[in-house]
Length: 429
Ligand code: AMP
Image 1 (cartoon, rainbow, N blue to C red):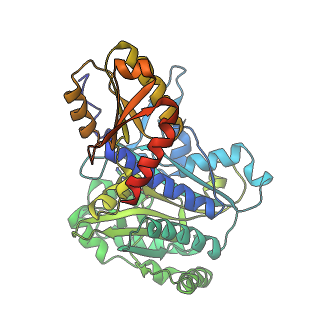
Image 2: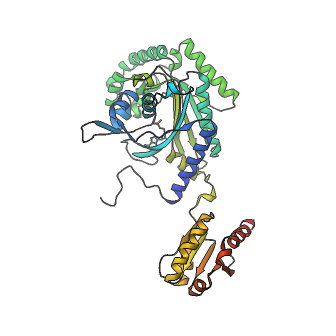
Image 3: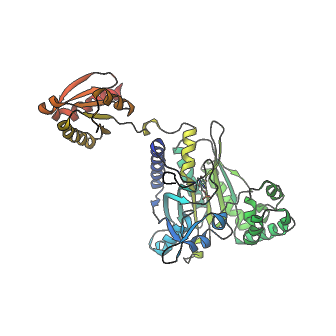
């Protein structure tokens, strides 16, 4: 127990940790180019926020939240997604009244869902995403899709498919929900218990049911497109027109409804199949929402956002060998002190090298020189710096190029200059 992680969590180490940092860096840079600013909401919120925000009909609220009572008996939930928390942050800090609209933010961090752990599905995973709030136009929907598309292109992910649909306005959705209720009423006795509660809470959720027998029934259900109001049709047509103008490829999928209750009008998902044929399903998804800000006590403001799973992005990049080579953990220089006095000098030398930008490590153990070289090799070091008694007394070091095996003595004060030249030659090779 003590040495096992909690089921559904995972340790992010070594190459994976570097991969995450690379991905997060790209995400951040692109968001900043689009003039989105970072926000960092807390991991915990009052449970009610998610019940109201994400919706009682969603699987997340019904089955997947990590909810507990704190010592003062408040019901607290570890965020299962970011959007509701960001809306709370916006409302509480009156950010819609004090900023130019739309108010545009991005976020990155862990989320928690009590799901069945399986390949690529965790109970604690990382999401990255954006929200643009306070503008209700097809143009802002398309900006958000363009931002996501730019991120995926910057990560060199070319096999991305964008599936898009509209859930229409209130009028369209209410008419559609009625039609779904009339249709499913005839089949409900054959459907799973979850679909019974979905029927009561939000019949749209039945379209997401994963039970194969239910999926067969879903195939015959009425289609959203037949219940769209003229205004909703015109809005969606404008979204598609803009995507065409920007040359962003998409496929309209009229079965796409998304699993969270707050969505309205435009909804979309990013699907990926790797070069090796692994189908990752949705690596990211999002959409427009009308009522969320108001639902949690804020002004009448619409928004749009998306969210990507960082673990999924990493797996896809790794699978398709799209992670850059230079994100490894190799050290450049390994400092090898022989004896106690040399250890003090090793610390000084390493500090100087680090401050000059060289990734430097020190051998802290009293092992034989041969063993130190083996360690340097395992760490992928390009150079070893050897400091023995002689070097300490002469205030010199020995620099050994571990690829060519050439070595030379160097005055301490010439160290940075010499190693920079040596490294320069290395890079020219
Ligand atoms: P959602 O908030 O459900 O729309 O999910 C957005 C993205 O988060 C998905 O497209 C996945 O990439 C990722 N994701 C969702 N659930 C999980 C999970 N349990 N484990 C890992 N990634 C997930």
